[in-house]
Image (cartoon, rainbow, N blue to C red):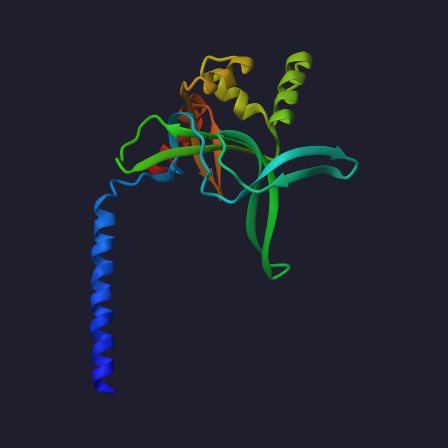
Length: 215
């Protein structure tokens, strides 16, 4: 019995040694692996359109229909995208119901690869998200504001970013599709990132943070 055990132990060690050598040979051929990193730091950013499956939870929004009870959506599984209507899966704890709840939030999302890439093995990107709306609704709001002089609401941030880059709305997405970068700014408020134009951030947000830190 002892001899049989010793034999099996020797065979196992020999097999393990072979597997280790085989693994070492495979790993020797592996170079540096790029890791995608979602930048959630405050500040002015610059980036160009980037196709990726972002790290937050979401579904693709295939269509939206306005009904008497509100908007209804058709969705599908998440996939890599550069600019798309999506449904963000927002998870939060309800004290009233004493359980975790997931809700779907419509949004227009634009993924941008950062112009500055300080880390050799990290691809830094931002996901510019405009919540509670969609591409069509934002464009309709901008068109209506142009025709009637009505103030912008949900489209205000996106329009300001477009304008601050010296572009018209019609040129903006063509500009991105051609691979050219845009500037914008992001800052955290609550659990979400807010997106504004660089000028507004520098004059209103950053200066306010500086004042707060001095008090």
